[in-house]
Structures are given as C-alpha cells and as structure tokens.
Image (cartoon, rainbow, N blue to C red):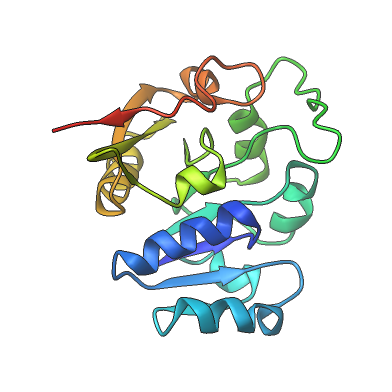
Length: 197
C-alpha cells in the first residue's frame, strides 16, 4: 500500500513520523516543492521521500493535511481521484484568528469531498492536537482515534492503518456523523481517550 501526505505542517509531520515509526514508506508533498522538504525527509530517514502534490495524489492512501483556506489550491489541477482513498485530517478553522469558516450548512468533509472528484473520503486524524497525535501510546493503553466515511472498504483500510500506527480506532459512521469530531462545533475534538486492554 502506497501512502502519501499532502501538507507538511504540524499534523502532516506528526502523521509522517507515525508512518515511518511503524516501518512503512511515506511520500510527502507541500506547496513549496520536494526540495523544501529535504531536512524533514533527512530526519524521517530512508522510508520517507519528498514528492510533488501530483505524485502524492497517486498513492493508494493520501492524507490531506493542509490549512483550511489552502485546501482548494493544494488539490487544484490534480484531476480525478479514481477511487483512491483520501484521509481528511482538516478542520474548518485555523490560526491565528481561530474564527470558524462558514460551511453553509455542510460538514467540512462534504466541502472537501466536492474538491476531490472520485475520491473515497475518510475523516480521521483531526480531533487531537499534534503533540497527542504524535504519541499513540499513553497511560499503558492506546489513544483513541475516530474515523468516519461513506465507503465501508475505505474505512476498513483506514481503520487497519490506525491500528498499525498504534491507535485504537472507533467508527463514528458516515460523514454526517463525522462532524461529531469536527472542530469547532463537535463534542469530541480534544477528547483525549485511552483504550486499555
């Protein structure tokens, strides 16, 4: 399974570290080009490589980890997604103002899905702050990650990846239910739950 990340900010970097720590390869893209990722790739080691957004979009599973206002530009011109899985890690709010964006009654994932024709979207990795996301094991158990989506097979793939990265996944249901973990507005964001065996 090829895995990539579009976005190399705090969330994208935390996910990249989780992936290589699990012994998996990852490709990372940002708006400034692969050369700008040289120091991050060197830190992550031989399992990571910097690529263009176009190259990243061809992976089997693509994590989209871009500031809300920059998502449309980040995926512009990438064409149809032809059934590839996109993990939407985004929330419709960003620093420094932390003023919610007007989604006109839609969930954030519905807005993102419209920008990614043909993608199988799964909402996940969006309810914890980067320092917590970076540490799947806590207090002798596994941190809980919520996920949601309309495609059962895509959700199963992401659930498997969540487990492989060291978390305990909980299926919220469809994208409408996924807004429970959407920040702001949902009751779950920031909820740091740990599953003990």
